[in-house]
Structures are given as structure tokens and as C-alpha cells.
Length: 116
Length: 113
Image (cartoon, rainbow over all chains, first blue to last red; front, side):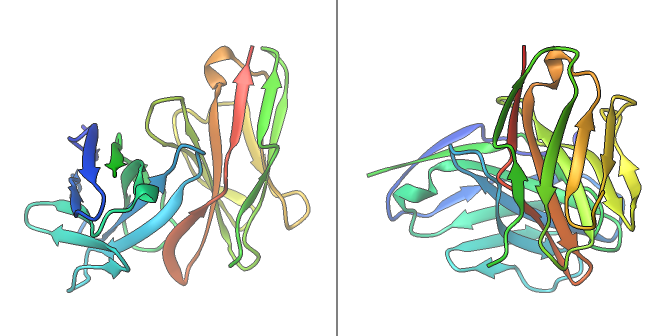
């Protein structure tokens, strides 16, 4: 079974608009972490935001926020005020178990294209 | 801000040849990982390494793969006898117990002919 599901293979968004990227996860472990990474066409993996399973508040990092709905097992990424430089592949990932050293399991990704 | 570095950025090799991919972790990081991404696919975990030994490995990480930290700074991934299906982007990632985040290097794009 897939641990991380990203159902949107691709999206177009206009500059300055907000975009929500969906991510659902599957785990029976009460302790886990959820991550979003950005992969531009150049190929590198850029960390965007992290949410711990015990965190009470949704994570925010600048224009990025994570809409964490624990009961629904979803961790959607919201990018506000999209910029042309946001065009990239976005991956949701999960680490299971206590401790910060576990492997990351990735979803298939969502390709975002920001248009002028 | 400190970064993970990887060398080479690109490598082309013949099937059956050995390759060594190198990573220099962020200096105070203690947890090291290798991931790979076949073109157009998702990122897959290969192996994690802590305290000079493998912590966890995936099914992909068979006897053809090995990792080591030979000099206390570099972290290497060796593929003994490359196969066509080893063609992928290989990412090194490092982390610390103090933060949840794994920081990825820029990757090595390996092409096996």
C-alpha cells in the first residue's frame, strides 16, 4: 500500500494566486513527521516545511503553510501568492516513528506550473 | 548556510563497472542517507547510516551496493557492478538529532550504458 499519496500529477496556477497541493498519508504509528520538498527542473531537492504528528499548530514557513488534518491523514501544502519561481515538482514525504533519523518515504509528486 | 555537497554531478559509466558517489555532509550532522530517483519517478530510500554502521536499508540496496565514511567527512555510495537499471539521480541527505529535517545534496546523475 502506498504510504504517501499525491493525487494531482500536475497543476497550473496564475502568478499571485494561492495553490493547494494535496497529500494523504497512511501510517499506524502515532509518531511521525510530514515534509514537503520542492524539486525545480535543475534537480535538487529543497526542503520547504515540516509538520510533526504531535504539533498542535499547522506549520508555516514564509509563503508556505501546511494544512494538517490528522483525522483525515492529510497534509496539504498551501503556497500563497505564487511566483514564477515556484514552478517545480513538489513532493510530500513522511518519516515514521520517534526520532529524527528515520527514512523518508515520498509520494509521486505534483508538477506545478505558474503562469504570468 | 551550510550545504550538503555531492561529487560528481554527472557520471556516465559502462555496465559492469564500479562507481563511487561521494557526499560531504553538513559538518555537525550525524545521520546520513542515500536516496535515488529514476527519471520521472518518485524518490526512493536506499540506506541510512549512523555511527559508522548501516541503520536501515531498502530492498533496492542489495549486495552490489555499499556505503562507508572512510575519513570522517566524506560519505560514499559504491555500486560494484552497475546495471542499466541503476541509471538514476542519487541523492545524499544528512540530518541531526536536533532537527527533523533531512537536507539533500544536489544529486549525482548516473547514466549506465
